[in-house]
Length: 296
Image 1 (cartoon, rainbow, N blue to C red):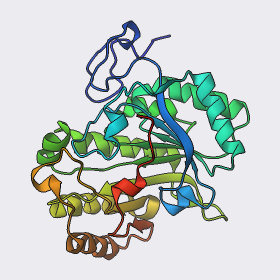
Image 2 (cartoon, rainbow, N blue to C red; image 1 turned 180 degrees about the vertical axis):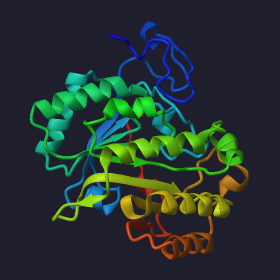
Image 3 (cartoon, helix red, strand yellow; image 1 turned 135 degrees about the horizontal axis):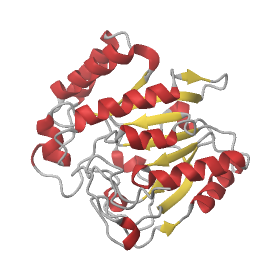
């Protein structure tokens, strides 16, 4: 069986690193999952966190690398504090979270470890995992990698960060971001189906597309809203996020929050499209409040 960590092309960077021999590519990660933190998390959308929390597994590394990343302390890893976990140990962690009352298993930035993570989900389901499994990702994902989770994942929570290649190039060195993200989300919707809540008000299956409002990004955000509402209507949920918080390294326009006027304008614009499956984050929200105490 092909080892997808050899000549690695799991992400759109297709850097070809042989991660099985100790080489690392753009994501900086080895050929086994590094997990920084496992916990019940309450900072997600209400249909994910609920009152019991989302059973969240935070992986180190990232294949996108946004300059404004709120989780930069682990996304630029390895931190030296991450725990090496094979599919069996990950499976056990999911079952432990289920025992703790988690509403779901929430896998944050797992795509650069996709083969091992997919195996871990299959093991957990065979061992009695009953709660939904969610993949929480940047949206900069190859369809072939997303397909590794087909039949295993109930919920996808991708970002759609950029419409303009100017922004995606400047902030993430990914001029192809929008086209790649569109294809990935199409595959996620195909797998997860329509946005479906249970009688308890929690999400059981479907896709939440998250868009973080960036400073100076009003028209970029409008293009994204236009695309998502036109293509999917209320088959998906759109989460419009105003929590952008400048990181110490941010300069220029990224050194300040988007204005409340911009965020209100975009909330009204989304509503004007007839989107009823939507979450609008309060302007006062801060990215710092959403960031767990990572091991670093």
